[in-house]
Image (cartoon, rainbow, N blue to C red):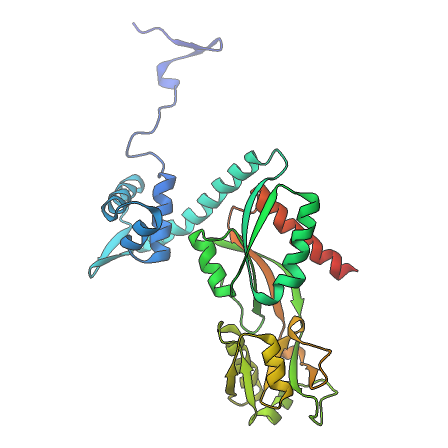
Length: 330
């Protein structure tokens, strides 16, 4: 007859000991969950293979094993490709949260010493000088072992780079009338909101006063100036003008805000600008505060969900958020 097992002087029969799950009950492998998330993001197994270093057949086999682990069909043929089933889509939603929680737990466990490491920071051009440079100076004093590598990118590119792992943290913007859709594997922390202005030639008869959205009808025949790299500025102009009741004529698409101001001062167009994009010292341009109905420009940090507590990234984020709060409070 079998003898009872003794554990810490507590008598336990074999039937009382919890069993490890068998192959049909085990939890999904985190690496395979990540492959499923990447398939949802990239669209094809070949793209997942290229991005992860696996062969395409290995990706396919891992996902087949994942289906066995969860006990439901996750993929279905779609021509020469595959697409996620409704169960697969739902598992991706869960997987994003699971992977983020694991990353956050790992980051917290590693964060017991002074932060050290390289953070790749992507930012749009007009935030580099007022936001990024003060952050770098603050970090040099407070966390000298954190090294920040700055990349200039428009918000759309920054989101793609964050999702692919090309950068660690992003400074991005959107407009309240053109809100940015944040992918589920990313999360955002807002830290600034700026009013909008209509830039007009200084000789305009109403140059010295604010402008309401309905009054923009006076500029229906004017050429409008927008950004050539991103779509948000273009969309903002169209939406604001739609509220005013007309379709704008886009005359110029340029990247340089200085050139936007110069074109406006030369009488070659008008533009919608956030506060950080106007050059108040220019004698040839007037900046008319725009009706709040047109909304605001919002700036925020963007990172992969679960990465906020990674010590180097947390130090950079705190320097950005704390620095802006201090400036606005002063």
